[in-house]
Length: 332
Image 1 (cartoon, rainbow, N blue to C red):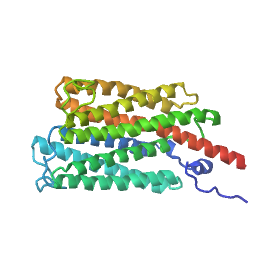
Image 2 (image 1 turned 135 degrees about the vertical axis):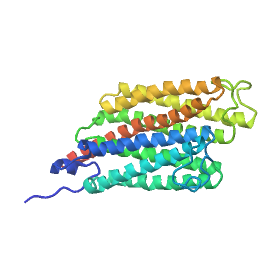
Image 3 (image 1 turned 120 degrees about the vertical axis):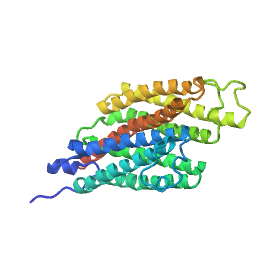
């Protein structure tokens, strides 16, 4: 007499039954990977649209000047490219979700995360339409960007769940204690990076993005007396805190025993992004806030949020699976 295993959150049932597993499904991993890259590209294009003043390139939505093919005009093409990228990303995410239902619905966590991301990306698209129809209202634009970053986070979570084999665990029980500390640091770095990113967008929308002509300080008193300068410096302080925390988390990852190759790679990306973002951040006042510098700054801020989130997600998923494995062994 045989008994079937109950569905699990980490996909162990697929392993025991010998069926396809997400970490061996290249097509599935490509879909998730391209979704993450597509969302990063979408947010970057949104930044380009913003800094080039192309937000009104298409005054209506979802069409552009009443047509599905935009006019051959610089601002219209930029705005419509931003929309089109979002549509492509939505289709890729839908394909990933359909494949999840078909092959991996026993992995409930993966199914719930992908379903939530797909619903949320639809909401982001609708809010993007409201941004256009409401004359680029700053509050709606902030909500639009914030939710897009949350979609990115959910797809990172889905990718890590899918790419990781739950049978091979990264940390033992003793190593998990230090890993928890590193995971908390990386988590806070990601949260503050997101807040800094949104504060930077807010500063731009308040016309405070270019009020400081020097770096890293604005010049003048340490605590700015002018409101716009104060808003700008709040953004710089938040960005500085996130950079320090991210750098410390990456350093701790390399000293952490049991770190997986994926975790070390994510930590290396954090280090590279920190270096690039510092140069790009300084390049903004040095180039008198040239378009390429402003667009690259937002793009790197998003990559910083993504990289620190990736580190945190890998660590906490490893700890979660290790604890579940320990509990299962004690029951046996």
